[in-house]
Length: 144
Image 1 (cartoon, one colour):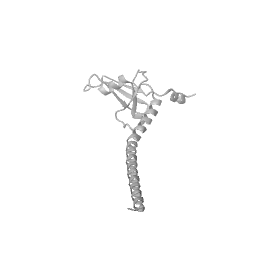
Image 2 (cartoon, one colour):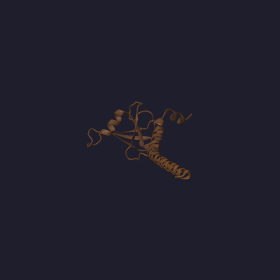
Image 3 (cartoon, helix red, strand yellow):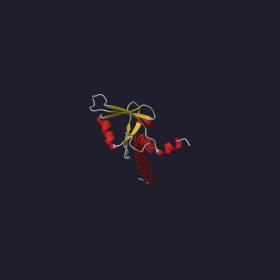
Image 4 (cartoon, one colour):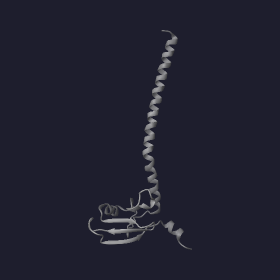
């Protein structure tokens, strides 16, 4: 074995180690891309909810002033549309999910609320209620 053979073996080992390292880097990059593909729509949805939450920070149920709310999609509309999300406090969200309340968006400015005694019974109370707007939005719309 000569010095040239030792040099070639060392270069071959070095190339093999570089190839293993590059393969590992590619696998890690692929993992990161998969994670980003999953997280990107979630981040977009959270940003969209943040915009809606800034516009309507209080519970939109009639007579409720609770400011700790969760966004819930309105029946009859897609959840991609910002108008389809309604801010509800925990109490009213539980009532909607249990079937005691039903909420429908008639248009961009009114919500139709229906109160049920039982899930299979007809509504015992039905009202149309204007959607709440942030105070800044009201200040801009007020005639001077």
